[in-house]
Image 1 (cartoon, helix red, strand yellow):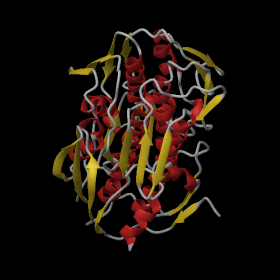
Image 2 (tube, rainbow, N blue to C red):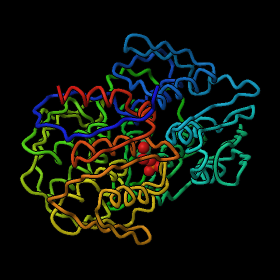
Image 3 (cartoon, rainbow, N blue to C red):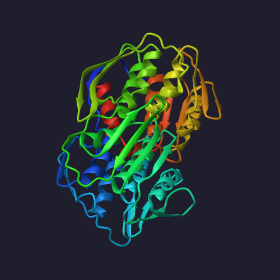
Length: 439
Ligand code: S3P
């Protein structure tokens, strides 16, 4: 079967209510935390994607029983010290930075070496940001190519709390250290640049010994050694990063409207919505509620008549980090020059997304200037594409595939987009839901 899709037509007006699958960050965190809880945890609407299935596979290798049937996942937790550290365990994190990085925090007490491997994309990503703080706890690492996967972790039974300054704004890094802190004796203190705070909220909800002080530019997190975790039943809210494709499509279409139901709108994730409002888009969060510590709501978006350019404040970057490719597309249609700064982390994702963003814009006939970690996009409100565009990202980045599909349906032209299978990473039903809009 061909792994390429071809689009030759723009999408027609739509007015729909949709649901997208469960949040990826919450799904992986729920799997990992449930694995070390005392008892059986049950989740509904757990994201059934390769990244999450890899997390389930990983905890199974550590001796945890998991039953995932009919949209219900049951995890039989083994307790905080209950992993079965057999010899020669290899954990394949596949494409998932979240899994590869977070699980290392839980493995710092392994009594046998454990090898972590990943796919081509993950094996190019930085793991020093994890091995450095985890080594301070007392864990040891053998890293093959100096900075990335594959790597082998050798744990310690004499783990001591650490103080660490996380200055990249990486939630993966922060979460890995929090997990480490749960297993080390003493109080671990993390001064962390703002990033998504799902791990902290989950641990707080579970009444574990974690304290969070929110400051203007960073959070101060204090974690003590954990003795026991209660099991957690969770109905995973939908993923804002998956919703973002449909939000962008609505913004780039005419006279359309979409409601996306029950989405996790944690303030640390909604940077794209804030940017769009600044650009003149009407967005309403309806039926807001707090669910197990997380803010959840329906999102209603209407196509705007005009789009203004944006001079994006860098403080919004981390809360929109997975949405920038879409934001660049929207800036391409805005009136005026948009500018985004301090996007160094964007080139460290599943593929170098700042480079790819400007490459796609160029193919679309939109001028952009990339300087170090900044990009300026010269918008054209009348943009129409009449040529053939081929998108083939050699690292098979799921978000590049899906963003290209949104561009094709918004601007026209003939798009040949490769690596459809990449959507299995985060959003296997993406094309199916898209079809429903056109029905
Ligand atoms: C994630 C954090 C972000 C994000 C990734 C998921 C998480 O990465 O890009 O898709 O679940 O913690 P960083 O924390 O490395 O910025």
